[in-house]
Length: 434
Ligand code: URA
Image (cartoon, rainbow, N blue to C red; front, side, top):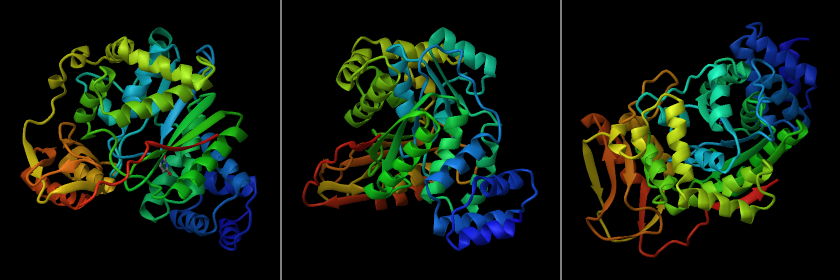
């Protein structure tokens, strides 16, 4: 077999066999197929796409390229959750303790942030002492003893995806449904869960800007998972504005803790209840969604979810006092209030620009190797739908560098659209694909 022929076949729109896909992926990982041929192959896929069988095979080959995690030591159904990435998305920080406190084990591998989207692992590292790099034994011990562990992906989880993603990132081939769905699902399959709840974001801060493409992505991932024998549900959720009122790292952990105390923003709490209810149902903790929702609401009301957060922090070496005293998270003391220059309503927000502004402050990475500043970020004071008067504070920026602050201010200013009339309220969950 020759890489040239496989590229040509896809370029001309034909279906590839499992052997051809395996040949390209494995050859690339071993260094036998050079970057320029893999880049041409990815561009051919970008324009010609892959059908369901090809996507299944691509996922399978990438999932098997490295370690696979064996979660069979945990009794019952193992349920994972994945978000396609957004701005201010601290869902895992709230959801994991909520569902674990209801009796569902959470053995979660999360990622770091890249570009305008944040990552759970970075956020957790703003808790003093918190370790996200546990050994496999430590990870298993945490889940066994506490029903919860949230860690970074092991270096050898789906290495083919890692190498291909790095090439996609520099060849404008990230945003194609076959490539995104197989990339995400290869890591989920390697991580060993029996059931997966997907949070597919749609809107200005998401990969998918409209509901139809978000639904196509959700269907592609649900289909790949089902073909691999996994129970699957995807929620299509709003990312036209940041989730909650904070964007950054330490500042998002603070909001997550407040949410576990019952004092969080409505959109974040509602999303956690909806995703959590699907998880409890797939995990057979509850046989219907309304009962599952009640269990989750009660986990907050009773304080059980907050205690589970404290337990997780302690088990992973972090300082549990942050739960009672969030000033220990070290959010920057330097603040700048951005004020509104007219009156009316926040008619819309460009969530991606807010994410980029947070990245410019230092909270995110432009390149994988960048070192981030966990103490900076943005606290929104007004969001889409809120009434605003001249001079009201739209948001507060937490910064450490004057130069970075100026860049961020410009982006945040551009991201707020002030209109004369109140925009229609948008529900957090747009739809369910199962
Ligand atoms: N997240 C991933 O893990 N892969 C993609 O291709 C896009 C988002």
